[in-house]
Length: 277
Image 1 (cartoon, rainbow, N blue to C red):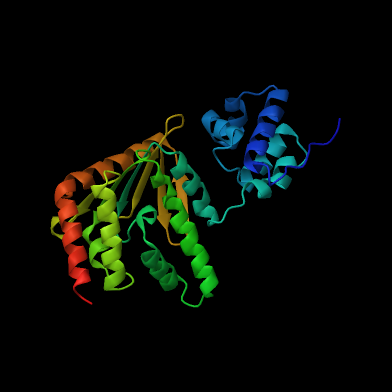
Image 2 (tube, helix red, strand yellow):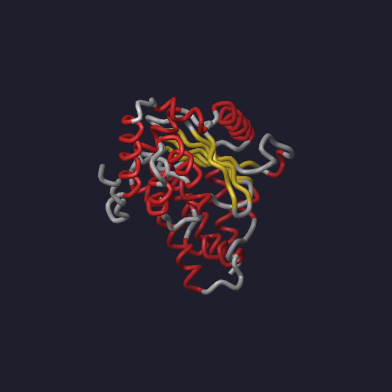
């Protein structure tokens, strides 16, 4: 039998790797559930690998090679299919954002990446990487701004954010950058493209004080939540965890200002920054 062909990274390597996985699995007479069981993942997870909607991580590639007896094929070709301009812990999130029907975020500290302006993003990256070459910072900024292209579609995905008042009050990049950033958010709201609420300091303790929340729902895949920390993050589809995060998000939203009052506050704070220079 001829050896498995090497995947061509220029020809949708993830899709090709997924198609090869389906071929090898079916040839072994296994269902998606049967392959997923020894890997401690669901059959739907295997289906997402096969369709190319989920990146194949090296640890899964090695397990698949062991289970399907594919002589290291998936481990060898995994690298080409997982290349991304984003950090490894975040690359899947970016791709799922583009496929999501709804994205809901609670942002306790920063403007969500999808809403950031160039000056705001540059200030964030420079603060996190104070000695990085300028070309590296510009590459980070470009990658972040590219994510916002999903808003080019007039209605999909639905994006609903709850911002802690801290997000409005911390002058990231200075008054001019913040005025521009908040006006950008206001313009998206006024264009009926996004929904934003603000959670005031005066609310005191709230349900999500332990961190940010990012929820994504899809037409043909289970919902997911992304939990982020410094230079790390976890994308989870466990139904119980997703349900818990959804409850926390709903509680925060219930405590926040209405969308109309939030827009008024965002515009007011933007004017305050504009008059500082």
